[in-house]
Image 1 (cartoon, rainbow, N blue to C red):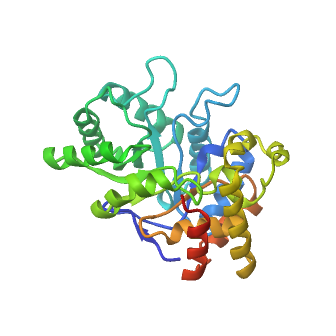
Image 2: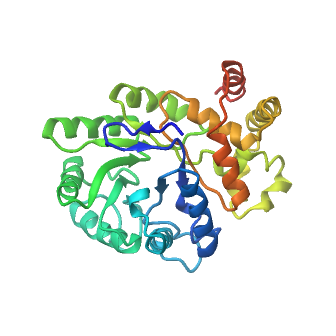
Image 3: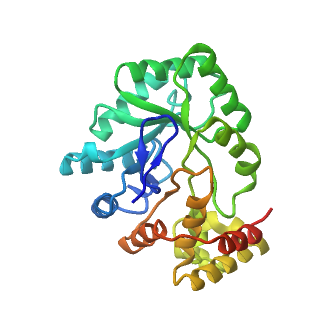
Length: 316
């Protein structure tokens, strides 16, 4: 498998990342372990999670995903085989959010404890914090890198203007820069990324690891009518895709999948991996069959005609 450089982080990653948002939410610990075994066993290495996963589940308080990954790392004793990407900044409770120096220094200790590791490969700002100066956030990350607790930093959910500003601050003050961006990007959700972020990422050689590669499962082709929304706990989040454009995209995925003896999910992920600015899409799986689909996607080469069909069907 050909690995890809993640900007100037020093990391070379397989072209697909596993999204840990499902751990402790739609799948339990034993299932999570089986999927992690399958993913790493197939030669992949980038695991993406966040401290907030999965506070939205009744009874959860956050940190469930990191805790499961930490238990798995301890059981397998394979920390050196994987790259752990986690995030800080979203609301974890009273006085537990944002990107201030005080909060980051506290939050990373919690993440390290849950992950049962003494360093995080890629520590990401989960969302912009307009109330904290970029200098404060980036200088705090610099401290953590100097201490060996973090190897590289990334940003998630930043606007193009704020990412550009953060890069300028890093350059001006000689601070570590965001080496990666984690935006919402898939065949349906294209416009914001392609207009406002992609040109900057290409110009500055920022690695891009988009989330919701399958648009919460819509691009698997499983949801084609409102009646299908009950098929998954995530179903209600898919309603917004059930429109003329969404169904046109699914039809194009069906066509390309039939031509390649493949599946819509594989084609949707292969389209992302073929985009010039993308390092490794992030996708989740809740079963070994779904994981196999994702792994097969990395072997699928889409010719220009297939890319053009998909681009046209999803044009905005």
